[in-house]
Image (cartoon, rainbow, N blue to C red; front, side, top):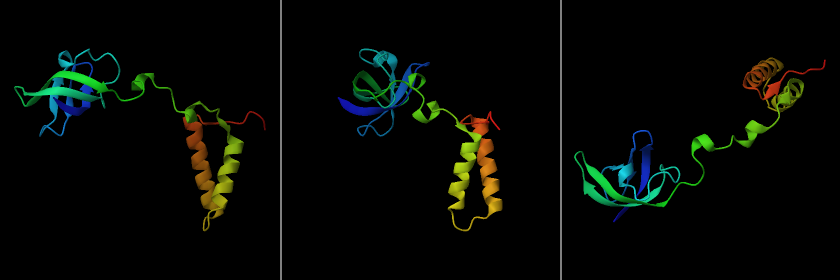
Length: 136
């Protein structure tokens, strides 16, 4: 039995490729060759054990047994990063903090500070992590 790691797997088409030190090229496998099926989680990155054979177009795996899967849920079920869930910062607060940081840099003038601050403020407003102030 050979061992390897699933390099890629196409769920829609039901096949993938295993990278193994025991084969000169990537080894093809079909979902029908996976013992126990492919529904237990993501296949990409899974460590597998398989019987190495020769297919029509090159190395082919049969009797593929999944030893361990990549940890974590599939990408579509992952929660967004914590930074995406924080409340937006007010524009006034954001501009003040950016100005303080830029002024601490040697060799930067007030024109550059304004240009960078305005650019970052617009960027933050466009992306939603900075919001317009409601009070004047």
